[in-house]
Image 1 (tube, one colour):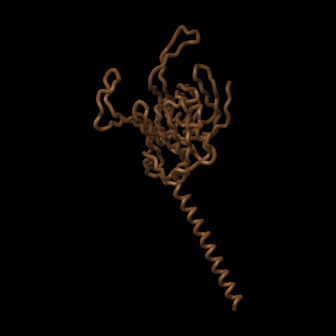
Image 2 (cartoon, one colour):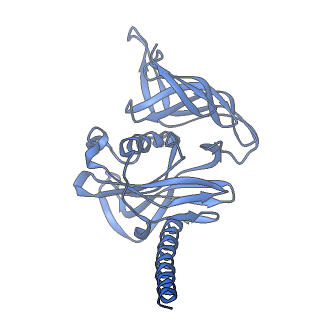
Image 3 (cartoon, helix red, strand yellow):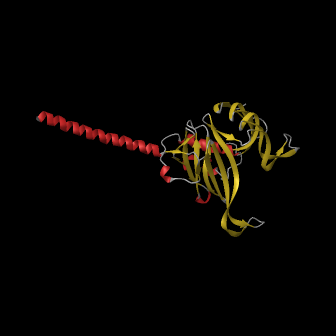
Length: 303
């Protein structure tokens, strides 16, 4: 009888111990689930502090991807990165919530640092799983005005908008003349993207169209002998859209952070993905060639 009591008590203790372990596992699972967000028909216009956690590794790779991601804008960033570009220890990187978008998992990271006048810069970087392609989906900048970047995840498209928010009116000399009663929002930049083969590619509303456009300010270009010069726009796109994405040979001029200026680039797209050799020319001759295989960078060489 005592033996049976001992067995019964042992079974009860084991069962209670098992239940505790099971409860702990479910709790951990629910925490992991809370760090994932289904973003179908979702507008990202602020930062949710409950979705921020510490990051353990890949900080340097994430910072490099952060700077590289501004290539997608073509235009020069609205903030000057000189204080942190070569001083990465000043940049704080936190893990943000994983996004589930059309069945694909994408990582997001919170990037923050202090810049001019001790203003706090904060942005959310969307990245693919291998951290070789990214998009800035949220950004708030106070630098000679206020800029706010938002992103709308709608069906299979990401609508990325950058607004300039005006607080004041200015006179012809650029001085503040009065404060606005209500802030004016001006759409400064807008682009659409979709996820293609784990990469974030530009999406165009027109399924088939040839593009040849220039914009931005102009800069003076001199011939090699310095005797002649001409003006060219800072930004350019020339190529063909097929099935809403870039295809075939393209010539582009974008601002690249590594050169700190607008750079000529040319190469081939297949279904919106870079493929084959892409040449980069900051000052006439080709400075760098990148070799891609359907969006993935294979190698880089300098001719």
